[in-house]
Length: 104
Image 1 (cartoon, rainbow, N blue to C red):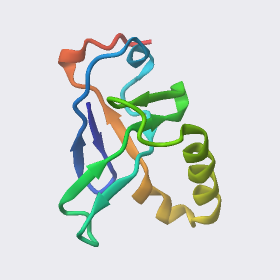
Image 2: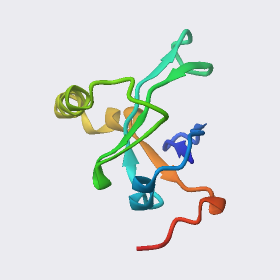
Image 3: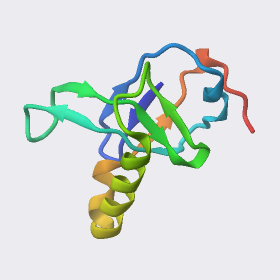
Image 4: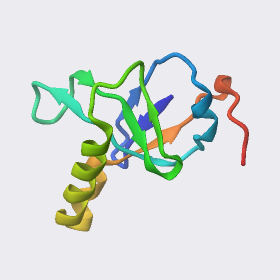
């Protein structure tokens, strides 16, 4: 799965397949936490699991985050940010064709 943003940056997420991933559709918004030493995030050291709210699905090997607290935290940040800053924290799911996600 590849997450990209409106600035053309891409991040590939590699994980074992889970049945809940069948609910993921192309272009769904998602949230994650990225850790980088660079202020422009040109080199990413850590990616937590990815949350896709439209299908209430988490993508990742195992929980790094307290899911309930992350959802609340994400909601609070979104409420406070101006609309033009929100794109920085959101990505869009692009499903690899090999994953055979059915169109729903």
